[in-house]
Amino acid sequence: MTDINKSIHNAVMVREVLTALHPHPEGRYLDATLGGATHSLEILKASAPTGQLLSLDVDPTALARGKRLKKEIGPRWRIMESNFRHIRDAAEKSKMIPFDGIVFDLGISSDQLANPSKGLSFQEDGPLDMRLGPKANQDALTAADIVNSWNKSDLTKCLKNFGEERFAARIADAIISRRRIQKITKTKDLASVVASVVPRQNQRMRLHPATKTFQALRIAVNDELESLRVALNAAWEILAPCGAIAVISFHSLEDRIVKQTFKSFADAEVSKKPILPSSQEIKQNPRARSAKLRIAYKQNQNKLCPEVTLLL
Ligand SMILES: C[S@@+](CC[C@H](N)C(=O)[O-])C[C@H]1O[C@@H](n2cnc3c(N)ncnc32)[C@H](O)[C@@H]1O
Image 1 (cartoon, rainbow, N blue to C red):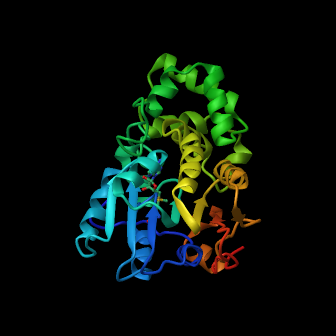
Image 2 (spheres, protein in one colour):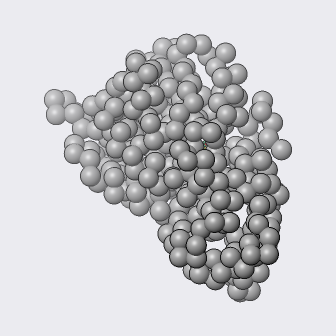
């Protein structure tokens, strides 16, 4: 169960993010995904005593924890409840534009996964909700709404497009058969419906058979891919010359969007290949194994940006 006072989330690629952002005391930074606040706190430490940071999240638990930590830091740290899709509005409200560095650490935290009331885990039984917070989507759509009302074609598309699930059609059939008998309202119900139709040889793999289904539903509920596209474009506009955007993604759908969006930026110096966590980090934090970091630096026509070569 999540402890509001203490995050169990182990943040990934902290050293690499700091190298990319290169925080300094005159700088202004934006952490679009506060979570357990490790990245935020490290940016604050590296930019002490006067560097400023704006941190956003949609999860009330993460925000409450962050606000408690903020008491020790003071006014140079602002924390706002905001979907990063609206990063520009939040930034304007903070009056901190332009930013010298912006970080996105995508996906969900271990605190959210361990909180059964969010319905994100097939290991903890909880309501099939999956919204990361009240501002995570605009239509209050939940995972239960999707599995109990979408038709076969839409369900299959969702599982295929957002989960890259090979057995999407079969899982959609199983969901529809089950809901004819009884509504699917709990995470474990859904996990067992999926496990009943995913072939045995796949069940021997390390991934739980419902992993991709849960990923797909979470992405659909929180409109994660479109939010990311909108947010990256807006983040580029509020970035100062010589500033950097660093994005950590955890699956290929996100990474593709980051790569393509970065490519579309004029005046960007972009890392060609994603930066991966060290083997030592993966050993210590297995969640890091699927992390990929991409960085885009905003070139400055008038002077050479000193940090640009650091991680490219
Ligand atoms: C992987 S965690 C971030 C961990 C954080 N970097 C740390 O140091 O602990 C991702 C966080 O992003 C938040 N998040 C996901 N989508 C979001 C969105 N569209 N807008 C704002 N926050 C979002 C989640 O609620 C979660 O707290």
